[in-house]
Length: 592
Image 1 (cartoon, rainbow, N blue to C red):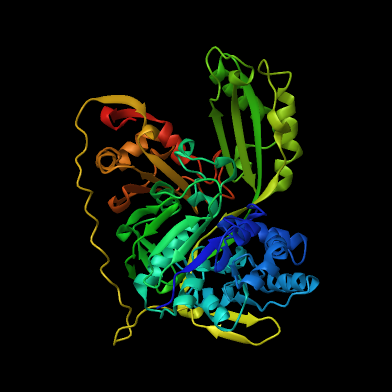
Image 2 (image 1 turned 30 degrees about the vertical axis):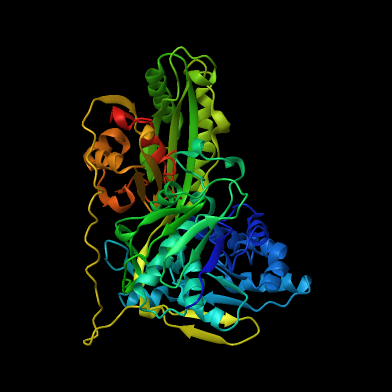
């Protein structure tokens, strides 16, 4: 049986800390250096970059990091796996090879392609094989999309490593797959090693967002030392799929059951975490503090993956313009009403001339304000439509007309902005057997790897396991004593984010008694009361008592997704902290 493999992360998004690769390579022993550069929005950003600058379809910061650490990695036998290839994995791999040549190095560089479906959309749509994710209906107008990338799994990465690659550059693989691939290759797991693959998937999910596993974005950050410079995480994955999450000694932040739980809840849906390699049951996870900055994740129950792959698709949504008018001091509602009426009197276009008109009164003002800023509320208007001209000078002139003719103290923060193009995220699905991974060694040949990893029965159907029964709540009763009105965050932590147009909100307790109370208190209906923005929306509530947590999916909160959302926080990153700030009757004995 092989020794555990230590897989380190050095990037949680495109734009993360540039020095992180060197910190992980030089800060302690690792076997693999990995990083996640891609989000749903990143593919759209890369498509715009490529349209302006040929060769701009990949994350150039990854190439810069490789120039910093490539020599050390080769000397130490550290292999690199990254999805920084984005829309152009081969171009990214060639840029890495060119950097190596400048440094006098000769690594074996591989690229994994096959995820980009843009050239096949017509064929897939004509065959009824390209379908809306969730709703399931066929997509019949593929020409409107500007990106379409299937989420591949780990087996293309495994093939590249089998062929001797030192550096593997992929396109759109799942965030966790850059960790699952090294573990599957190191331990020689077969494709139906469901529990082992599930354990590696959970470990990959924990480290995929970098410092979010080591104290970053953690509700209880005031308890954590070294938050000004948090270290990046690694996962030590054993042959049975169990893992230990840690970080290099002497770096900031911490790795605790709390920080790991918080990251486990990030951007998930139900207890069955679907991936291209395996379905990992999050309701089977067990966490244990195994030492300072060490958290053990016990073997996780795995099931076969779905027979389809998710496809991240983006279309151009038109143009958008956001303007704000400051409302200061007294009579805020009356000022907002006058500004709105006067704007539309001055604008040569009617609201019906735009595809979308969203107006909000944002009350950031305070009573008896001690500073000018504390006296200011905002009237915020978002306009969207296909005609850029209707969002340009006409809107600016209408705002300018308000300056001397409407409310006292009128000014427009930021100058009113300019029209900008925006995209709309449209998730889809496609049969997995139609999207193989294509693996190339630069300067060598190309192989094709089947993406299908399902377990067929004798009659050719797919095995579907029952999955673990819902975990029983921890053996604790909810406190029954007196309550005190207090912010929920005094008792629970939260982590939130975007899932297309939906928002994910995970809430976790830090003791069995606190979870017993949370489980009874925080229903979907109670959440609607606490977060009025969600009052009319569908909310899915999922229990994860094994990690003392609940996960909510608020459907439609973000409209058509982050790129087009008119919410102040279009990615719902702050949704959990808003919930923690809400005051509710909390059992007195739970308060610190």
